[in-house]
Image (cartoon, rainbow, N blue to C red; front, side):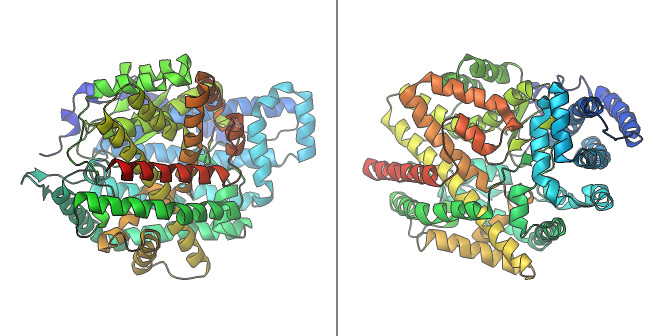
Length: 607
């Protein structure tokens, strides 16, 4: 079995990008037009000496950002389909060049608005009521006012934007286009191809111990060949951020990641949370969740009859013979029905996902390794998820579509200038869809074996969100502190630190071998600030919301849909508060962890 080429993929397995641009030629025409517009912006006078001048410029800038969003996402989506295609590489490179131009304009614009004093801005807001539509933009500017540099320094950083993004781009290029793994033999003697995505979504949860262990060995051997290069890339990313934090006057890079984000540049907005609360979150999960996960690891070892539990076994199913196959069409029906508890408006958007081909689901040569769900402003959301064809895929696809619907709804209701999604909140819409699918399947099927499998899936989801990603965040915490203490971040340091973190969490229940220590090489999240910790907060909140929907009914679900429409117009704490969940302390994190413990109790009884 080998991967097919992009040109051989059936149309129904691709997404329909024509709502963004009718063709690549239409994209190129739009590219030419916006290049000219950016050149005009470079000559534009950005002196806001009246409320009307400020409003006119904000409206124009908002429209520019929306058009740039289309241009860059179309190119990114094409590159995700096949990063080895020279035309896709060209499009992405051109889009990155536009982003570079736009970052300089963004810097000029932000600096011009910051030149307005807080008192003068209040006066403008009282004079021109339409300016209040940009309140979130102004609020975020106030958060960074004291950490902005001189005009010349900000201009220099803007000019270097593409270079500063090089570590993330290098990682994506290496893992999608260069990194390859040897095929392996499964328990039946068949040859199976190995890729990062298929390993993480199919192989590591396979009931075939031979396949899991062989594929893990193949993965380890492939990663080893690139470990020094990728270690250098990650070290560059971390040291870059340490330097930027010092330059801006933050006491640490962690502070900067949690508190600094430039409005309107895309990505995710910070929520002004303290580094102490961030560290409390990491400590809470590692201290309180570890005992439950160790119990589950021991149950897995016993149930599978293994002499030792290798790292390649930590997600192996406890019921190896149960692996329900599901067609993509059946998955669409399950997911659409499951989200009905969020109201007709949400469900209608979800039905469009499958009718209008919002998902790229082929597994072809050159395609992106990691699934995602996102959106194009003034169009709708899209998801990238190579489809494997079993029940496991239904839930993971549901996760990505949770992101897709979030971006769709917020894009419909918010100006793009206000709509950078909250880092704290962004993983709750996705993980809630997982919970809703589990609830739907439980309520509509009496098969106790399925119910047990769903408990095992939830454990996998909590493992992924509250173990894998929390331990990623823990690695970032330690590496940033080492860098700030001027310790060189060598390959050996990264491998040893990752190994120490895993050993401390799993104790003596799991063998932490060479391959386990290299797992820091798999994920792009290390190049996204402190993003990994957001998963644990998101799934904790969605656990509470899911329970409330079950107890209180559809009104809670409809309110959640209203929250999603707010998008980046509120910070994460405010969004959770609107949904009726307090996430400003660790109390609900602890409730979610206790729920994980109750699932382990139930699974121990069931076996």
